[in-house]
Amino acid sequence: MTENRGKNMHDFCTKIFPYCRSLTGEGVRQTLNEIKSDLEDFDSSIKFDIINVPSGTQVFDWTVPKEWKINAGYIEDDKGNHIVDFKNSNLHIVGYSTPIDKWVNLEELLKHIYTQPEQPNVIPYVTSYYKERFGFCMSENLKNSLKEGNYHMYIDSELFEGVLNYAECIVPGRTEKEVFFSTYICHPSMANNECSGPAVQLELIKYISKLVDRKYTYRFVFVPETIGSLAYLSTNDNLDHMKKCMVAGFNLSCVGDDRNYSIIETRYADTLADKALHNILKFHIDNYKVYDFLLAGSDEKQYGSPFIELPVVGFCRTKYGEFPEYHTSADDLENVVTPSGLQGAYEVLIKLVRALEYNAYYKINVLGVPQLGKRGLYPTVSQKGNYGTVKPMIDTIRYLDGKNDIFDISNRINVSTDVVIDIIDKLKEKDLVRV
Image (cartoon, rainbow, N blue to C red; front, side, top):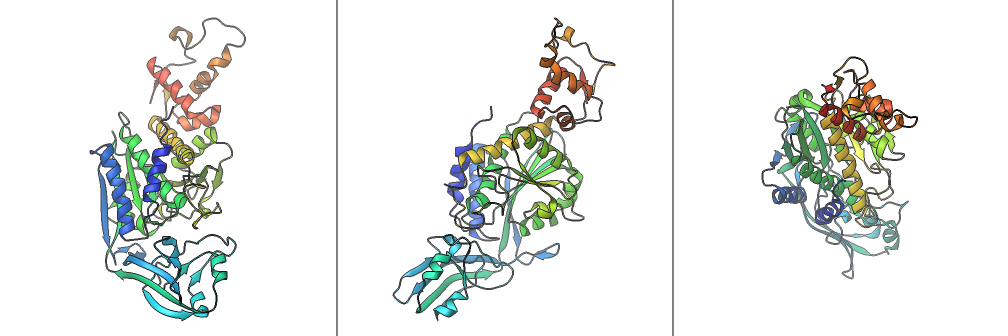
């Protein structure tokens, strides 16, 4: 049985939830340092590298933006009351807001306020990364309660030539062939659409680091969404290496709720990553959701874009944009992200890793049907009803022709890869199978 790590992951989400993350800045560094510290406490031999990419660096068609720092921000009425305040919620300030210190009337103030009218009780998450502006976010109900008068708009922030940070962790295996996992670290206080991905990926690193005799090398990255993945791909020959070595990749996003499971397929849905994740979800999850590449909105769209074309699928519980709390203050650690939700995502990934580690095109070692009875693999008394107990083994053997991997066999005979793996192990013990 998979160890229950749901509470550990939820505790980690709680720790990093308050940090004011953005594309750049101290909140990103705080988050990466928390991950690094947690890994060092678990196993100091795990290498976790935090990389700096200077502002102005060209990354394919994009340019790394200036670093953003914010110290304070609020709207104050003429009686000194703070209508909204950054220290109460970092969602109250539009991401990458430029500084402002100005008294205005209500009409002018409203030009700089963002709400989510169809959800009148929530604070929306709003950013302006690549065009300089400032703004404030609040609930629609609060906006509608504002009365005529003068208001002080104040944001203490700065944009300067700094760095973008991402992190990489490589867990080596027997071969240079790689399985890739990516998640992002650029959203402020939202639980599913930020904290869940890093928390689950952190626990996955711990699990994989303790696997004995790993076949694959595992590459993990924690990046600011879009610009971070592009920066990663465009530097240090990473793209050429990944094109050569990657067998399957998975982008983790919104993996902490209890509602559903989702896959976002690659452009043509024809990679090992597609086949593997579909298979695991098919046999372990009821009614999971499938989205094609046209609905890719996270970093899987960067990894799968033309001429990059890495075999990376998206994995979510409920897909980003498909749950009502998405990109709002309602995406919290009580009603959205739960220990059991995180645990469910983790268990899917553990099954996925186990299946990939075992995956190969196996061949039976004898001509004709092997005699299983003399090897203790088949009842020696033939009676109606006995056959059903060994049918999965018989069916597996029928496809051990070197043309089917374990996912193909699992799909053809309609049993999970867990069952196929156990059968392969039994056949290996009897020297009946080879790769």
